[in-house]
Length: 467
Ligand SMILES: [Zn+2]
Image 1 (cartoon, rainbow, N blue to C red):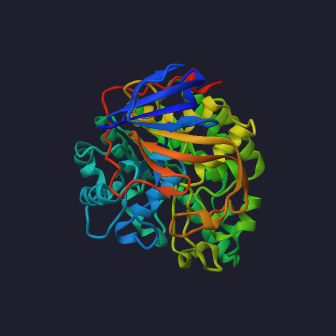
Image 2 (tube, rainbow, N blue to C red; image 1 turned 120 degrees about the vertical axis):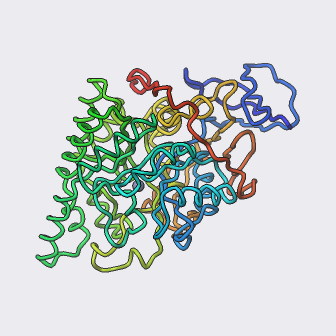
Image 3 (spheres, rainbow, N blue to C red; image 1 turned 90 degrees about the vertical axis):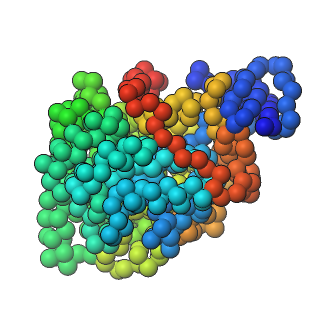
C-alpha cells in the first residue's frame, strides 16, 4: 500500500489546532509529527488549510432503489464528499412487499456498489418491523429509526418506521434495548398534528404557514417527553432526531442532568432558517418538524453551545420537483436536500465565531462516532484511526448556488448565501475522494461500517461537548 504525507496544514487534534504533518499508511493515521517530515510515497501540501476529522452525517435519506428518481447512492454520496462528509448513516426505506431485513440487504448491496463514502445503515423499527429488530442487529445495522407519527400518503417509503401507538413504542424500545444499539426517534405527537391539519384544511388553508401551524411546538414537546419516559423505563439508548423547540431542549437538558442515556440531533435548517425564511423559500423549506420562530432558533443555538444538542445531522431528503410543486402545502412532501451544505454552513459559523472549532468537530464528527459506536475508528484524528479528513481553506469566501449542488434536485434552500471557509479536499481512508470540484475515486469505494462494540456504552460526557 502507498503512504501519503500531508504537510504544512493546521491539524485539529482533540486538544485544538496544531501545526503538524500527518503520515497515512494503509488508510490509517500512522503518525502525527511536528517539524520533522517522515518519508512517504505521496505528499500533499496543505499550506493555509485547516484539517478536520471527516464529517459523519448520522441522518440521511438518500433512498435510491425504488426512489432513484429522487436521488441515488452515486449522486447522494458524491454530494456528501463535496460537503466534507466521509461517512453517512442512511435511514431505512419501506418498499411494498419487502420486509425490513430484505430492504436492508438491498440497501447494503446497492451502497456497496455505488457509495463513494463509508456508510452505516439504520434499521427500520416501526410496529411492523418489531420481529426483525434482532435480525437487523445481527446484520450489522448501526442503529434503529422509529416515527411517533404516521407516514402521510406522499411519504409511503416511511410507513415501516411508524410506531402507531405507545404500546408499540414500548415494545420497540424493549427490543432495541436488548441489542445495545441506539434508537433514533422522530418525536412529534400524531393526534395533535392530525387534528390541526383537519382544522386548517376545513378553513381552506393551503399556504406555507398552514404547515408551520399544523405542527406546533407542543406536538414536539409532548412527544419528546413521552419518548424520554419510555426510554427511561426500557433503558434504551435514545437519540432524538431533528429537535427544534425551546421546551424540548429544556426537557433533554433535564434528562441529561439525571443521567438518562439520551442524545439530540439538530438539522442545519433549524439552526440557520426561521419560519419567516421558510415562507419566502416555499415548499422546499417544508420540513418536519417545521422551521420555527426566532425565539426557538435562539434556544437551539444556546442548546448547541452548551452540550444539550450533541450532533448536527442533515436529514438529507431529496425529492423530485413534481413532489414539491403543489400550490397546496399539505400535498407537498416534507424534507429538503442538505448533505452537501451542512458542513459548509457550520464552517461559516466557525469563521464568524458562532462556534468554536472544538464544537464544530464534536457536533459533526466526534460525537456522532461515539454515539453510533464508530469511535475511535472514525471521529478523531489520532494514530490508528481511519484517515478520514477534510481540508478547509478558512479564508476562502464563496456563494452557495443551486448550480453547485450535486444532488438530483440540484437545489439548496440556502441558495445565494455567502459563506466563509471552503472545503478543498475530502480524504477517506487515506484516499482523496474529492478535490476542488473533482471526484477522484470511483463509485463503490465507500465501505460498510457496523458498530464497533455493542456492549460499550457511549462515552460522551458533558465536559466534552461544553466549552
Ligand atoms: Zn429523517
